[in-house]
Length: 274
Image (cartoon, rainbow, N blue to C red; front, side, top):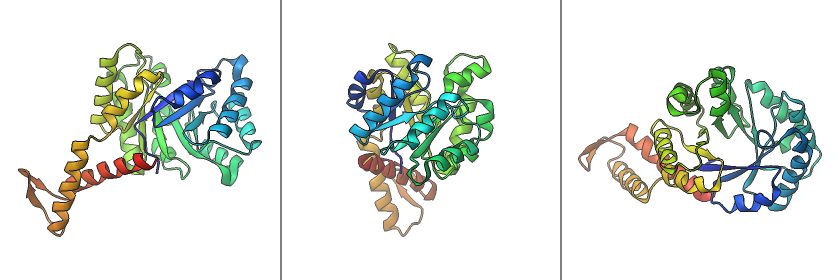
């Protein structure tokens, strides 16, 4: 089960930064071959990313270029020719589960878990189909490109409706939703506020574009010691009653709340084992 609070992007054209990104404390580091790499650097970045994955092992994923582009086809071709693949591939601009079928078909049994990016209204309409694909371990909202489609600012209010639709799709598919990066690098209070807003509507992780953003994201999205202790105590009380509604700490403890408590503990355990 995929479980993390934060993912950190690092440009595939800057291999000297890979190790530093890996030490930043993010749940997953994504070596980016798409937006962070110019046309002239794609081939070198591709080789650097695959070489690093082969050497470093777990903890690093790769974001390929869009499958409907020439560079995306080259990325996929390179993946078929190497012995070691990352555990996870991030796939941008996904608008149909068919695109994921193509990747799974090309890589066969070696196909890693996939994280599609929803970045267009068409992709949003197909979000449930996409996130329900058997190779998908999580979904990410690509808010920057989506805001360009809507011709609005990359800010909370204009993108809220899209976020809410993705929350519902991921909840139905029982998959994690990763939020768009916060683009204002020197605004820690704004980052914290947006993390808290995302967490409040059911988003379970956030992406970062600088290592200094990771600690704030981890703090907001990780279950606290108090939440974990409360969940354990509530589950114990509920089980002792034989699964019946019971008054606990001044509130009625019943099945819907138990579902939330179990999710807290499962998330905590998943992150320990990730």
